Length: 116
Length: 111
Image (cartoon, rainbow over all chains, first blue to last red):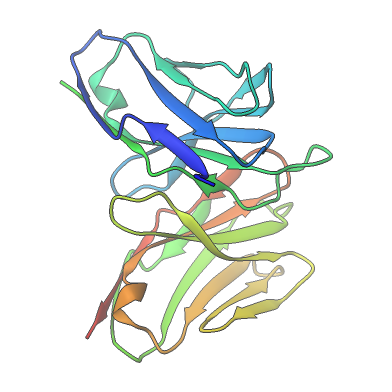
């Protein structure tokens, strides 16, 4: 049982490049999330999904896109990388029922992304 | 907007002493309060959580208290050990899909 797996662990991008951060979970959780963590700050929600085929914006969605074609996978796409997107990105999942996500979130180990 | 304030930002204690981290939330509809521990190079991991119908919860050396009237909740770690050194995050959720995280407390436990 691997939990939440994120790839790659590290990446350096040039301004204007694009890339996809991969996230997969094997706990059959219906809810999945993408956060970014900047130094000295808490986690900011980028996008979330309540199930396959359903995604919605969080607090800081600009510059990112997501898709959820399966329960297990929730990739995050950066189309035109900008220096402001240098951050550590965490994917998380949780079990939820009845429209409530008040359950513990399980996090991956993050992707450290630098944009130069 | 919704906000969670966390104090202190850094805390240094001697091994065996207690550590207390405090959080204040702004949204009175918040009803779920998890605490996460993040070790270097890892993602946050849940260590304890509390729901709004409970005032205190304990799990071995870790306890959390909640004061809904004052919108405060705190993490207490007793008999600290070097392996408790990490960054701790508090969070608050209203039951929707948005969890608001505090900025984190870096705890150092000196042997």
